[in-house]
Every structure is written in structure tokens, then in C-alpha cells.
Length: 250
Image 1: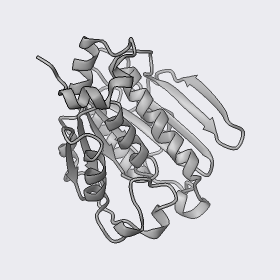
Image 2 (image 1 turned 180 degrees about the horizontal axis):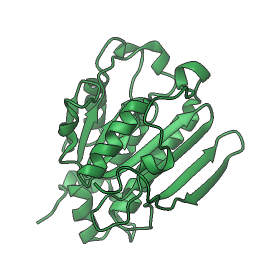
Image 3 (image 1 turned 90 degrees about the vertical axis):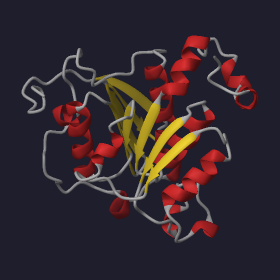
Image 4 (image 1 turned 30 degrees about the vertical axis):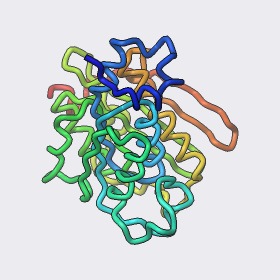
């Protein structure tokens, strides 16, 4: 039984002729469900390139409306969208790429009361630019054995890491790297600025990591990618487990 229609095979024809997209991998690709928390500078290009790469199931989570200050980096939106819900506009634009893509939305910011909405996701992506949200998502994904991708951009610099939270793996999570429970005085986009190009690159790299991991093209788990946009330099750092993490016994 085909997982893609004839129209979809036409849309993705240049992609699917790659050796990596075997019939078994196409089946995997069609079944991956990605939850993206934050449809902003990272979430917009990430969702666009996931749909453009043949993923068929997305959950978009964001409670914000579109403002002028979003438009330099949130590429799914334009001036005609001001005041509209981000998730509604994003869903509409993404389904113009592939009408057969199943896109669900939650037009609220994620919190402890609605985080269970993410329970059926294969991978949850944190593109929220909010430290408390990052900590909430990390703990939820560890507790429920859901793979978790953390993606962040400040100024021209980005860092991205995908955590494999399957139960048979050694523990490593966001809390192991950044153990502070409270939101310390971290720089944020609205105070120090953000490059739209670097945000776009974060979305693209995050999309590729999800595909690499899901189709087992390379080992992305626990591999932190750091990019300096001004120097055009990229590094991959292997992060090791931290035994005294309070989530280690979950």
C-alpha cells in the first residue's frame, strides 16, 4: 500500500529519487508526527521544510498573533496577516505545499495544563525562546520517552541538539547541560536581537536533524550543533550523560 499519492510523488520527485528514500524509509517518513512549539523564526522555516521533505503529520503550537516585528524572520507570514493567529496562517500556507499533509494546531502557548496535547508526537521541537517552556518540554519528553529537539538562536548564533529519549538509552537531557531550574537572566531575542538568516538556518538544520534521526541516516542523538553566523562556522559537539541529573531516575 502506497503511503503517498501520485500527486505527492510528483511534488517530491526530486527528493524521493535519492537513495536514502527507500520504500521502507518513505513509510517511516509518512508516519512521523512532529510537534513544533513556537511558530516563529525557527518554527516557520522548520515546518516549511519538513512539509517540503515529505513529512505528513505536524502539530503546530503557538498562542501568539502575527505582528510587524515578526516579518523579518517568520517567513510564512506577510503584512496581510497582521493580527491573525500564527498557527492558522501557518497551517494554511503549509497545506498549499501539500494538501494531503495532516496539520493540527493548538492556538495556545504550551503549559502544564495542555502539554499532554504532545503525547502522540514522535519528536517534540522546542522553538519557543522561553526557558520555562524549554524545561517543561524537556521533562515531559523524558517522562514520556518522546524524542526532543532543542533549537535556539540569539543574535547570529544558534545551538541545536536532539535527545533520544527511548527507554533503552543512557539518560541525557537538556537539564544535564543546563541544570538551572529557574529562568536566569538569559539574553532573549527581544532584548539583544536576532538575525533572520540565523533563525532560518536553525530551522533548516533542525529539519535535517529530524530527517537524519528518523530515517537513521546518521547518528544525531546527543550531538549539539553550534553555528556562528558572522564567521559562517559550524561545530558538532558530542554531549555525554550526567549521572546526577534529577531526571535520571525517571
